[in-house]
Image 1 (cartoon, rainbow, N blue to C red):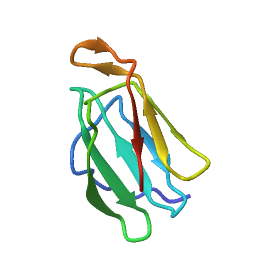
Image 2 (spheres, helix red, strand yellow; image 1 turned 30 degrees about the vertical axis):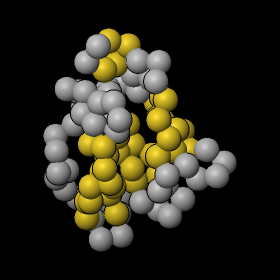
Image 3 (tube, one colour; image 1 turned 90 degrees about the horizontal axis):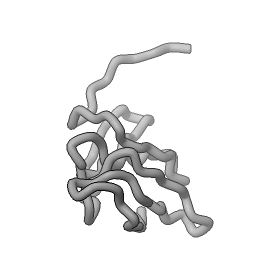
Image 4 (cartoon, one colour; image 1 turned 120 degrees about the horizontal axis):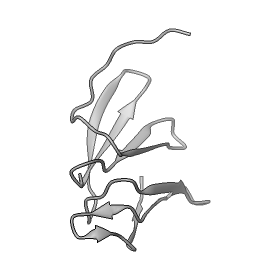
Length: 90
């Protein structure tokens, strides 16, 4: 196993990442109720911005749906615990 040091575009903690079907990695949310969504390409070690969540959140969960969309649910936002759900379509 080889570890390489890389930097993310934005410091994050309390975020969630999920591997997409195309091999890219989607990273959402984080402490400070981050709304930015970023994508990491492990093939060339590059990052790109994918957009913003409708609600910034931390400590949330994500799951890939059978059709490839990504469910982003719950967590904590600026107003407290969230009951909201968002769907990202890669």
